[in-house]
Image 1 (cartoon, rainbow, N blue to C red):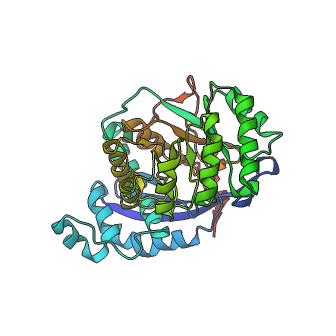
Image 2 (cartoon, one colour):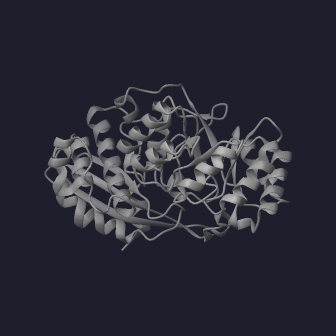
Length: 387
């Protein structure tokens, strides 16, 4: 199964006014992702995704250039089934043979950031091909699901104190038993964040799991005050309370907080997560598979979570491809506890390709179809590709 071509397209889907929202990332008016297609000489096509930003809007031109100019020449003519070997070639570059002989990574300079996201897209596409070549899902390739379904949480919560309860209740009415809201810098202060959380809990009642996400915008002292005051509301977890680069601050917060601490959407490898685990900085690991090296790296992070007795809740704020990969990982790993479902404007999740998003008692069933079970609509791709 030789690789014939590796293609990359930057997709940008404008959001209608009613689907736009404002947070600390600004006013979000579009949804972006880079679609990578790996084709084989047997006529199969595998699809992967790279994200230009943690939020939904970003410039994908650099990712397209990396895939076309740096990764494609390494891959064309190679056996697409050798996912691990190709991953090490992309990660370690010319030193890949030395790295494999030594049993340790010798990565290229671009082992972080957009280069790793580009590698993630290729890796996801290779796993998609592996499933399609065998006529089975990626979930079946890695041993099947640990559980019949995976709980899902609705990810939104941008409204102010007066409207946040009604927004989250609408998600519950759609069948979710868990919801997440945004807090932090967008509120202008801890007092406002706490007031919004108080209003949310009052509207939801005690039976619905409530998570919060600060996008890394709080200082350590501010985060400690928030966690202490919010403890009475029994939050399921507090996501990215402080900047992910502040490893020491995150660990300090976790030592004093009585609420579970989650993070990881900004990390780019299992090595990042290993450092966070070593520092005892997290209760919940949240890799984004379109940023953190793809499904192969996701399997390593999931194993780390399980071995460390921590939860795995993949970050899902991208297209249908990374969503299906995250869904697969959470179902396959015994550490998986939730899958995130973006609310508001997420056209690349809901319009790029058709998948089953039906909830069953607040949970999602395993994905259906070979590979990721995703076949992008070619007309949709053509309409939204940026030149």
